[in-house]
Each structure stands twice: as C-alpha cells, then as structure tokens.
Length: 369
View 1 (tube, rainbow, N blue to C red):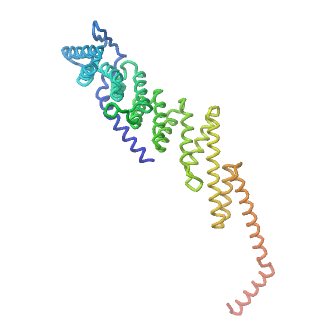
View 2 (cartoon, rainbow, N blue to C red):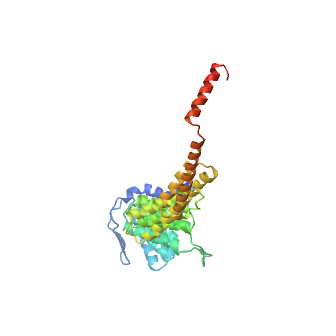
View 3 (cartoon, one colour):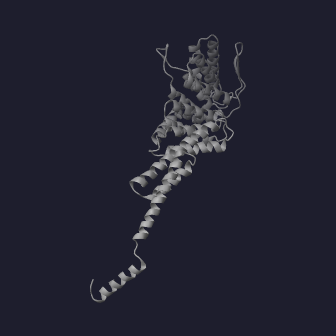
C-alpha cells in the first residue's frame, strides 16, 4: 500500500509542477480586482484595469490587436485562427491583463470543439496563475465538470472517429489538481470522493482507502464524510479473506462501522452499517475461536485457549460462535477440575511425608546416601 501511495504522490507532484512554476513566476500579477474587461463587435476589447505588466505602449497595442482579431475570428467560428492568436497573448505576455481573458476564451473554444483536455489545461492555468480573474469558483466548477466527464462519459477517439476507452487515470489527475488548487473549496471533498470511486473502479483498494481517509480526515464537516466513513468500512470489509487469515482488515472494518454508527445514528444507511458490523464481528469472533481450538486441541494449553474463547464471546456474544466457545470453556473447566482431583488423590498424606523425612534423616546419620 505504501508503494502505491508513494507512486500516486509522485504522479500528483509531476502533474502540477509546471502549473505551480508558472504560478510562482506570475504571482505579482495576480494582486488585482475581479476582471473588468469587456468586448463588443463595435469597440473591440476595452479594459478598465491598470496595466501593471510594464510593457511599452506599442506592445500593449499589439496585444489588444491580437485579442480583437482573435475574438472576431471566434465569432466567425474560425476557431483555429482564434486559438492561435489567443495563445500568442497568453504565452508571450503572461503578465498582461488580457492573458487570463485569452486563456478563458481558449477554454470555451476547446469545449466547443470537444477538446476537454485542452480546455481543462486552460482553466487550470487560470485557477493557478490568475485566481482573481472572473469568478474563481466558476473556474473550479468548469474544471470539476470536465473531470467528471472524463471519469463517467468522455472517451478518447481512435483515429479521431471511433470511441475508445475512458481514461480513468486522467480523471484522477484532474480531480487531484482541483484538490491541490483549492483545498478549502466545496469541490475538494467532491473531488476526493470521485478519486475514491475511480480507484475502486480500478480495483485498487489501497488507493481507494487512501482517498477516503483524506476526505474524512481533512473534511470532517462535509456532507460527504458520512458516505466516506461507510465506504471505508465496506472497503476494509471487502479485504477480509476469512477467519483463518490476518484480521487487521476485519478490525479496521469494525472500527469504521462503529465510527459511522456513533457519528451518524440517523443516517439512512444505518442498516447497512449494522449488517456490516455484525458480519465483521462474527468473522473476528470465529477467528478467536479457531485460535483457541489450536491451543485446546493441539497444545493442551488451557489458559491460552480460555482467553481466546472469552474474547470470541465478548466480540459477538449472540453468535453461534459464542455458543460454541461457551461449550469449549465448560469442557476445559471439567478437564481442569478432573486433573486437580487426580493430583489430590495421588498426593502423599502428611504421615507418609513425615515418615519419608525420618528415613532420609536416619540415612544421613548412618552415612547412607
């Protein structure tokens, strides 16, 4: 599990490294109010913001010219031309006030063209580098919608025509970027729940548990936390191999089922949790019984067997296993009692002990050993 988690963390760091680098370089350009850029076909782009890029007037005019030409091309649905011009602005002059607008228009065009990955990258750059542009929450919302589409419906095209498979790994990467960009937003726990679902679909229990554990730990007040607790318990329950094997997964399942029932007694899924808790306790109780049987039948170590049988009864007192454990305890008590009686019968009397002592003393006096 540790190896899988380390690999996932490496992928996340690699996925956001380039965006983070741009963010650091452009941080100074973000200290401005919400975008006040408007456009109309008659006047073109107009900005009420103070330009803080330090560009020469002729450079600013060139940028404005590119933006107007790009928007005109976009209105005419000449998307290739528009994207090319918007890219010039955002790449060559990232600190200019029109750069986030260029990225935003690019994202909308890519969505129109169904290029969801390119749209996500554009929104991602806006969120990292220009968080004060427009509505930050709306930008996150667009990113989240793309990530959900990547997870549930969107399929890459083979030869640009034939629908291929869903790219779950990319969906996970997108959700994790949202968590990294806005860990205190409402989209963070939603994203982690989707990450857990994606890993579950990939049958990776370790990574499913890791995502759910982050959700319940970091977002205890989220409306999703109760579902995460139950899913954690059910995932651990699914790892149980049987009473003959290591019971750590069983114990973890019991812990999370109990936590769920204590914290959310009015939840609509209480019945599921109670059934799961009962099943896990029965398995753990049976495991204790089998261990007790080993000491009872194979080693005749009755004290150890009694401890394990009592644990089996305590864990699931109403189960058939508990009844069996009680029967075993009665048999052990009978055996121990019988052994004690035998020892007492075979023990020499006080007179015999005293006579043997006198004989030993007499032999020592006579020098007989």
